[in-house]
Every structure is written in structure tokens, then in C-alpha cells.
Length: 474
Image (cartoon, rainbow, N blue to C red; front, side, top):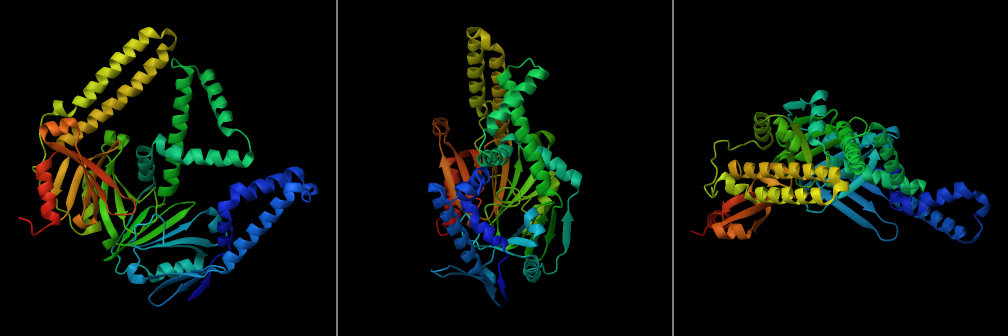
């Protein structure tokens, strides 16, 4: 089968030049009209614009996608010909996306990846909708035995407790930046002035700067919440004997097909709000998946209880060592010793806030606001330290299971030893004093998920890993 790519590929080739050449040119054209086309620098910009259009058109015309009997072949290039060939047996995942514009023009973007460790898919192409459906039909699941669909109310709950202001900032800020660049106006200044005016109308005990910051963080959180709802709507998982297929999306639709053998690890995560409500999220780190995946950087399944997490791990991997015991390499020194750093930091914050409160009389409300935020952050850090002390550790069986934290999240990683890419030991002065160590375990996948386990006995930890990686060593 030989197929030309969809005409939308032509506009994809123009995308790198859109904000630096094409859109500024069109804005000048609308502002000054056709009368200045023949004058000075604008004539040069017109010539460059036409050359870019011509090159993008030629790239699209020479782009060919071939489906062979044993693999896929992509040929491209105008003067220098290039070919990419991927056998079917080497395909780790096929990722399909259809946004609103692609749906209008009956097109779909397809990303075909191997288990190579690059950050991008090996083949990225925009095909007609009928061709993409045929491609997925050939890769359909054999003997699929279960399709799990999640209700809308559970997706809303998951979006509410898993989203955060910082993740919303990564979505909101680029949109505002591109809008300001396109319109040529200071959008940030307009938003901040509008927020400041609204906070003055509402009135608050907190200072004006604190109110503006709270409104901005709420805006980021709402952005992340809405984004996750649109991404998670219609989420379904189809399980086959050797393959798994995941679909989701309402405006932009996504579908991912990958092999069970490409699951490098399963990660159970608990952000702050999920810890408060006792909920969990299961994430599959899949080799060969593109960096821009369903809900971020990898495939995430919204789960809401510990029992369902264990059941899904069994369904996805086929085995789960639930009776394995924690390694005895955990150094138990008492919960007071575990939270000593957090207690010292809290004492330092209290003394600093008390000193600034009496020193700066005009900024007392702002100091109280910052002190409250800092105390809440330290309390959450102390909770993570207690969790690492009570439940953290390593489980050694056919697989390795690491229970610990990373950043501000509780995290559990279940993986084979062969899929562990990096084990880094970290020793602070307190660790060297009591013979313990922190272990940061990173999976050997494109997403490079990692978890940190604390208070492990260094000598026993090294002996365990040396025996695993050197079976002949006694």
C-alpha cells in the first residue's frame, strides 16, 4: 500500500516558521495593505515568505508512506532522499491523534515508535482517516477479553484531585505567550491589572499581592482541571493477550496501541489532594511511546482505590507478588529521627517570621501569608518523610518494587531488573553517620520515571544489587 500524506502535512511543515515569519508578515500585510509590498525590506520579506511556502509544498509532495508486508517505510526529501523502515516486530507502540482541525478535514496524526530511547517518535505522519483506520484494523487486538470504560463523574473527580496549579501553568503560560506574540500587545499586564481590580472590589484581609497570587494560582488550577477533563473523557482500556489499546478524548481524540512486553514499569502515584482523599493513579511507563502522551509524558490510568491498583497491575503484567516482604535493608531509627529535618526547618521559619513580623510593621499581613504557605509546605514534607519511614522500602522478588517519594508525590514503582536504567545512591552527612543511604531508581524508558527510597542500609543494598547483576558472585 502506497499512500500520500494528508494535505495538512503541508501546514505542519510551515509550523516552525509561523510565529517568526508567516504571522508577522500577514500582520504587516493587513496593517499597511498591498501598497507597500514593493518597498524596501517588505519586498525581501515577501520573497522569503514565497520561498518558505514553495519549500513546504515540495516537502509535502515528496513525502510518501509505504505499508509493506513486514513493516512500514517512510520516504522523504527533495534533493537528499531519506528512508525510515520499521519492521512490524520492532514496533513498540502506535499512537494516533485527531484534534478538532484534523477532524474537520478527515485527517489523523499517527506516531509509530520503536523501543529506542529517543524523545520523539520514529515516524510522525498525517494520514487520511480511512488509511489510519485500516492501519489500526491490521493491528487490532487479537482475542480481546475486556474493555474497561470510566464514567464521566470519575473522570471529573480524577481531574479535580490530580491537577495542580503548576501543571496548569505549563498549559496557560505558553498560550498567553503565543497570543501576546501574535497580537503584539502586553497580555500579561492586562490580566494582572484586571485581577488586581477584581481583588480590590472583593476586599480581603490578605495584602493585594497575595490576593493577585491566589487568583493566578486558581486560574492555573482551573486550566489544568478543564484540560484533564477534555483529555480523560471517554477513557477506555482494551486488553488482549499480547497487546493493549487505550482510547480517550472528546474534542481531540487519542488512541494508543502497544505491546504488553513494552511495559517497562508500573507506577502508582499520589499527589497532595489524592493523599488527602486516599485515591491513587496508575501510570504505565511504556518503551517506544512518544514524549507527548495521553496525559503528559506517559500513559495514565485513573484508579481510585488500592485494591483496583493491585488488580490492574495483575491485568497489565500478568503477575503481581503481593506476598513479598519488605527487604530488611531498612534502617529503623524512629519517627522523630525521620522528621528531624522538617522540624528544624519549621523552627527556623517560625523564628524568622516572628522576627520579620516585629521588624517590618507595614508588611505584617504579607509576612503572615508567606509564613502560612511555608508552614503548610513543611507539614507536607514532614508527612512525606513519615510515609517514607513507615511504608518506604524495597521488595525483592521476580520484580523489584520501590516504595518512596519523588518531589511532592508518594510513588511506588514496580519493574523488572532489566528495565532499571539507573540506580543512584545519595549519602548526606547524617546518612554517613548512621550507615544509611538514599537510592534513586530510574526506569530504562523514554519517560525515565524514577522514585527515591530513603533510610536504606548501604552495605546490604549494594550486596543485593551486586548479586542481582552478577549472579556468579557469591
